[in-house]
Amino acid sequence: MSNAPQVRRTDKLMSEAGVAELLAGGYCGRLATVGADGWPYACPLLYVWLDGEIWVHNARAQGHLRSNIDHAAKVCFEIDEAGEVFPYGRFDCDTSIAYRSVVAFGRIRIVDDPARKAAFFDALMAKYFPPASGRPKGFYPRLGDTTVYAIAVERMTGKETALPAPDKRWPAADFTRSPDVKG
Image (cartoon, rainbow, N blue to C red):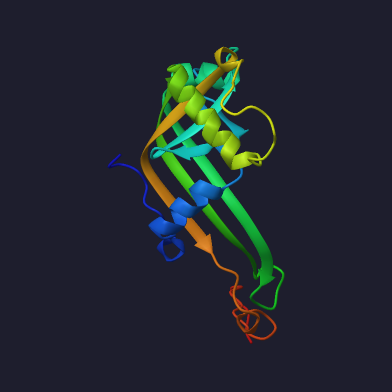
């Protein structure tokens, strides 16, 4: 992906450790695909970061997502975590938000191996459901009714804005950025 655009706000780049932490613990991601008609489609999905790849699942039935994946394996996956909105200057437009986000580009494939599909669901249940549920573990009678996908990541970036300390926010500090405004 040598022609890929570079991150414009390099001051917001997240460390590799921060990217790994957000990927491991993020709640929901959005998978973006492109269909044969050229239209983009984004679908919110629960996911697991497993073996260095992003894993998701959906129904086996052919729908919008599957049609797009069959058309083109190139995808984009995004997760984010919003924080507190805060003012940094005197005007409403001088407001920001603390956040963390990861955007990954890669190629998606269907995982057909039942053992790998079960491993995905084991990881999914471990991430999203308390382990002491009293239900049998590793039993997935509808495994054949689902499609599991793995995204081999080719490029990934993380960005973040930390919540400034109260003394670095307006009105304690004035970082007004509005153009043509004189103190």
